[in-house]
Amino acid sequence: MKERPRGPSILRRGVAVLSFERGIFEEIASDRGATRQALAVFVIASSLAGGWPDTPWVLLNWTVALLPVTIRIFLFKLASRIFLTDVPAYMPWFRAMLFASAPWALLGAVPVVGSTMGTLYVFVLEVGVIRDLCRISTGRAVITWLIATLAIAAVAALATTLILFRIIDLGDLPALLGS
Image (cartoon, rainbow, N blue to C red; front, side):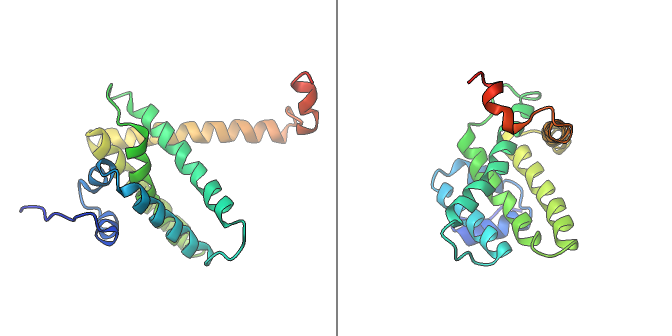
């Protein structure tokens, strides 16, 4: 069956992402105009998850919310080098990952079940991003996802250990820096 062209509509792309259409992430990644769409999807999903923001800190909140996505993109790019030498540039990943992360924000607002379902849903979407952008098998995309996620877990565990055992005391930061 021939695939219907989706076109640059944010709604059509959103539906294609949510319905796991093969190749949608490659389409989003290759369209430079989709950057604004991806940011809009991310901001709308984040806003709906936390109630529409009415504080002056809203831009800071969205910026901070983008940090984990940015870190994951970097690690996915790095881990995908195991299977590839020619990995796509950062911005295509950015566009595709913002679309892929939106369901987690929406479903994460539902207590207990929502965060679990959102996490699983986004796992599948992130594997789709890796598969489509790197043009590798789903199995290799899962391995890439696991490597990146384990790297995040290792850094988080190390940071938690350092904080819990007070190896790094932020009060002594000037002394540590030699100031």
